[in-house]
Amino acid sequence: MISFTIGNDKFNFRVSGIFIDSSSQRFLTNTSEDVEFFVLPGGRVEMGEDTSQTLLREIMEELGEEIEIVCLKAITEDFFEFNSINFHEIQFMYVAKFKNKDIENHSDSFKGLENKDIYKWQNINDLKDLDYRPKHMKPIIKEAFEGDYSLKHIIFREK
Image (cartoon, rainbow, N blue to C red):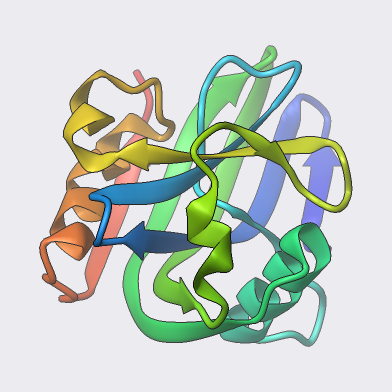
């Protein structure tokens, strides 16, 4: 994976997916037992792997599901602190959908195949109150849900 640490600084090259269950007004989030906030499902890019292939691989590894990429929605450059570490993260966010819609039948939290991640379908109307990170991506998720697939480039520095 393309992630490295230099002193107190960490770089991540990450890919995530905005998965929408439009029939139930929900989108898929991911967290873990030791984290109090949600992110979009995805993972880190491997050397020599393009970002769309990363998302296909990560979702297969984590959920055992095949997906279809709809479009690239955002490229973000995020600078933030987490657990006293300064992060520099490049993230490609894709709108994607599951080929097998059975995964949309989950009404409560569920574990992935790696048994470390917890997934949950969240109602899009709850997005404003949800502890989702990075917070500045909430409008991008909302746009994707509304069918706005225009590509955004965002640079965000946490204060």
